Image (cartoon, rainbow, N blue to C red):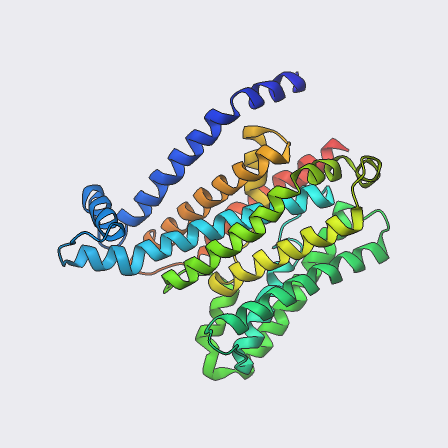
Length: 347
């Protein structure tokens, strides 16, 4: 029965990608149109089309809202959702852990600590307003991942799901207390620093969208390149060695790539939990476990999910804007319990 379902998924994979692309496009248009000020679909499409092709666009409130507020935000949300979901898929395949994700393993918290530390100390790179925050976020994300896996291995040589998740949760709590301590002493930056612990896309711009796009193209390309190796890891490290995979080298490359991508996302949007946990499982139900199909499907599904979460966060209590992390955590907490229960039941 399972083989039959798998064959059916493979057969309809192209149609699935087409539907996901169409759904992503519609969701992006919906998120641009809906808000405290509603804008028609025709005005939205006309404004964007004319702006892209350098055609005249009549000056109006709708033009300013679309081009200066909603479009850059929608682009950043789309790219961040795709990136976080892609990272979760890669981590789950690499570690053979259905609960692996930047948030559950403490990587996002580590990146947030790096970003907060850079902001509190005023660390910057010449010629870039985001460079210092981004570099420290990436470095702390990678360091956190290595530390968590090392501690889990020291306690449990089998690197079981329970051990990794337990260490990740404890590490996240520890990092949260350090971030709170930094915010307490950095009173001048309290509002801006609190942003990193809550997650928000308010005030993002096209430069940040371009940085996210560059990171996604480079890091996503590396992860797609190693999709056959991820398939081998999903069966087991011994299997990967037997088919000729350089386990240590591939592991290091994928872990660095994931850390860089999470670090870039956190440096722009703050900590957003559970996107990389939930969406790979949804994508797996759509196209199966083969990472050649799973990675692109998770990319689309993550983008759609985060777009809808952002839309809810800024409209449900309008004009008050909720943290997007509130929405993703509510969905992710329920999904976490379900996935964890199914994992334990399958043993």
